[in-house]
Image 1 (cartoon, rainbow, N blue to C red):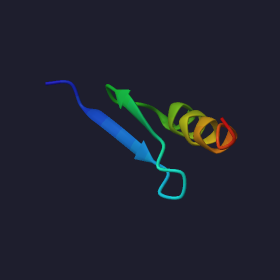
Image 2: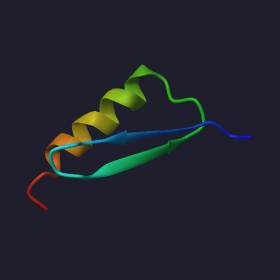
Image 3: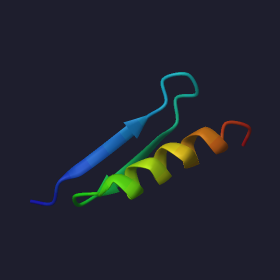
Image 4: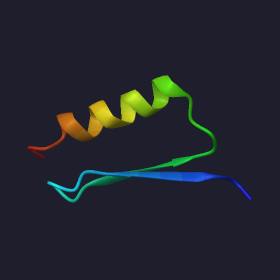
Amino acid sequence: ATPTLVIKDKVSGRSIKLQGAPDGNVLLSAIDWLASTKDL
């Protein structure tokens, strides 16, 4: 089974699902993306 990580912004309700085992750079990029899309 492939590990899956879901990062959820509780304020906006947005989330992103990462497949596999993401490294630190991927995690930070996902968090940055969630923070930058709050006005979409």
